[in-house]
Amino acid sequence: MAFQGMGMGLVGLYGFFIGPMGAHFGASTATMTMGMVLMLVVGALMSPVLGAVLDRVAVRPVLLFGILLASLSFWMMSRAGSMGELTFWFIGFLVGMVCYGPLSCNVLLIRAYGVQRVRALAIAAIGVSLASISLPPLVAWMLERYGWQSAMTALAALILFMLAPLVMFVVEEPARGEQPKIGQLNDQLEPGLEFLRQPVFWLIGVGMAMILNAMILISVVLVPHFLQLGFSVADAATVISMGGVGGLLGKLCFAAASASVRPYVKHLALALVLGQVAGWSALAGAEGLTGAMLGMMLVGTSGGIIIPFYPYINSVYFDERIIGKVNGAQAPLFLPLGLASAPLAGMVYERTGSYVPALQAVVVMLLVVAVIFMALPRPAVEPAAIDRGDL
Image 1: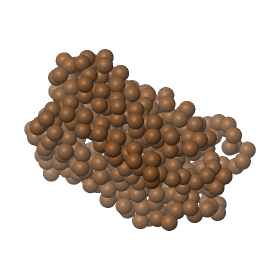
Image 2 (image 1 turned 30 degrees about the horizontal axis):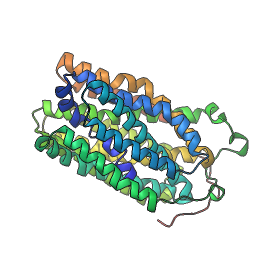
Image 3 (image 1 turned 120 degrees about the vertical axis):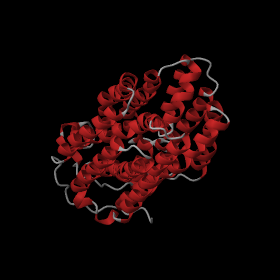
Image 4 (image 1 turned 90 degrees about the horizontal axis):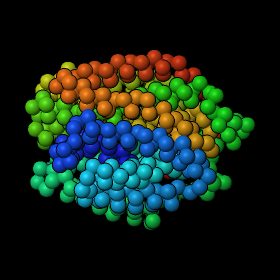
C-alpha cells in the first residue's frame, strides 16, 4: 500500500509543478507536459526487461534500489540549475519509481497471496487513493508557502524514510518453489514468449493502455483546466482529492467482492470503462466546483478499481510464473498514445485557450476501449491454488 501510494500516487502531483517549474526555467506548457511522455517512455523501455527479471529473482533488492534512486533523484531535481539537469534527474526518478512501482508490487502480491490475490491487490492499491486524498492539499500548501524546491525536497525525504525501512524490515515474499500456479496457460507456454500469440494479451494490453493513458492526463490537464475555470489552487486540490476518495471507495468494494469477481471479469471491465466515460464526460461539461467534484468522483471510483483490476485480469488469463513477463511486455503498448496525448493536450490549450477538446477526445477514446473489451473471452475455471494469505 505504501509503495503504491508513493509510486502511482506521486504521478497525480505532476500538474501542480508544471506552472512553477515552467516559470522558473522559462519553459512553455507544452514543454513541461513532455515530462509525462518521458514517464511513459522510461516505463515502456524498462518494464519488459524488469518483468522478465522479476520472474527470476527476489523482489526486495529491486524495491530497495528503486527507492534509493528515486529519493536521490527527486532531491537533486529540487537543486537543478537548468532544464538539462532537471530532465536528467527526472529520468533517474522515473527509473527508480518503475523499480519500486506497480509492476514490482503486483508481482510480489500475486506471488504471496495465491487465491486471495484479488483482495491483496485491491487493498494495496488503496495506497494510491490515500496519496491522492492527502498529498494534493499538502503539496498545494507547500507550493504556496515554501515554493516548489522545498516541496520536492520534502517528497524526496518522504520516499526514503517511509519506504526504505519497509523493505528492510517488513517486506517478505515466498520462496520461488512455493509459489502457486494460478493462470490458465499450460506448461508448454511457460518458458518463452508464446503468450504474445494469444489475442487476449493484445486485447487487455491495448485496452488498459488506453485507459491508463487517460488517467495519466489527470495530472497534466485537470489542474490547469480547473485553474482556468477560476478555481483556486486549494479548490483544484480538493477536486483532485475527490478522485482519491472515489478510488478508495472503489477499491474497498472490489476487495469486498473479490471472492465472486473471476466469472465476471469481462463484464466488470466493460462496466469500469463506461464509468470512466461518464466521469470524463462530466468533467468536460463541468463549469463549477460541484460538477467537477462529481465527475472526479466517477473517474476516481472506476479508475481506482482499474488499478488492481489490471494485474488481476492478467493473472486470470495467464500463469503466475510468467506474470512479470506478461505485465512488462504490455508496457510498450502505452507508448503510441502516451507520446502524443500529453503534448497534444498542451498544444490544444495554447492554441484554443481551453482543455475541453482534450477531455472530449478522452471520452471518444474510452468508447473505443469498450468495444475492444467486448471481444474478451470468458475466463477458464480457476484451478486449485495455494492460499498463502490470510487477509
